[in-house]
Every structure is written in structure tokens, then in C-alpha cells.
Image (cartoon, rainbow over all chains, first blue to last red; front, side):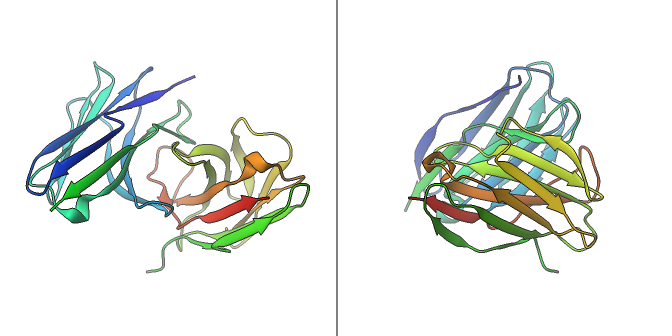
Length: 111
Length: 113
């Protein structure tokens, strides 16, 4: 079965600093999604990547998909306290009917 | 526009009891999926329903069941609750059957004592 590994598991950054979160799949990626979750709440959709080499940005968050490496990265520029939360990557299963998630990366931003 | 809604927000049950969780998808969405998220883990897929039919099932026991109604809302039922069923139950909706972005509700926090 497919597994997604996220790294780091958690990180603390100072406000204004840049950071990167990685998501590596054990199998071919058909669609890769990034979500953000506040503790104990629902998931907020950030971005979806489908094609190798694809890169998308929203405000200060950029996500890239390296299909050959079966890996995606999420980069936050000039972090703010509002960026704090749990970032989850999810991948379509082969049928495209369900998402498989990594365990998440907990981000804390200190001011 | 209203997003995915779930009820109740919190629930406390004892072992052996049964529970029903409810979900209303985004207007126009025909697919509803259910996920279980235990503390410190990512969500685990339970079911997908599309056009009122079960289209996918995760690795969960038969104590878990679901259905989708003509208005595309959905219920998740869990029988004979175990302590290990304590989790955040998330509902997600999407417009189509496959490879479409899933939008999640706020979840129902279930505690089994």
C-alpha cells in the first residue's frame, strides 16, 4: 500500500524566516494535495499538484511536485504567526477515489 | 457559500454504544467521503459515496457503515463502540467521483469512555 512520509515532523521558526516541508511517496503520485489543519479542526485546502514539475503559489506559500522523485515540497516565505498549524500532504489512491495522508508536520512560528 | 457541515461537533459515548454522525456536502457536490483521524496521525479513509452508492471502502471493520441520501448528505454509523474509536471524524465532499479536490468539514470529535 502507498505511504506518504513527511519531514520534518515538527519545526519551530522565527517570524519572518523561510521554511520547507517535504512529502515523499512510496509509490507513483497521481495527484498531490496540501492541506492545513488547526489543532482539532477540519482541513483547509491549500493546493493541488498533478503534473511533474508543476509549481503553484498562493500568497506566501509555494508547492512543487517532483514526479520522478515521487516527492512534493511546500515552501513558506517570510513566515507569520498565521502560518502556524499542521500541514498535511495527501495523495490520490490509484483509483482516485480516496486520499492517503502523511502524518503531518506541525509548524510553530515564534514572534 | 456554505462549506461542508458536520454534526454534532462533539460527542461522548461509552463502550458498546452506537453513534451516528452527519454530514452535508457543499451545494452541487455529489461525492462524500469519511475519514478518521486519531491524535498525531493523518486522516484515514473510511468510505466514499457517490450518487448514493458506496464507491470505496477503507480498512475498517464492519462495525462502520454509512449511507448517502438523495440530497447527497451522508451519515456514518459506528456500532459497538470501542475505546480505540475515539477520534476526529472528518467528512469531505467533492464534485465528482475521482481525482477531484476534496473539501473538508470541521469534523466531529468522538470520545468513547
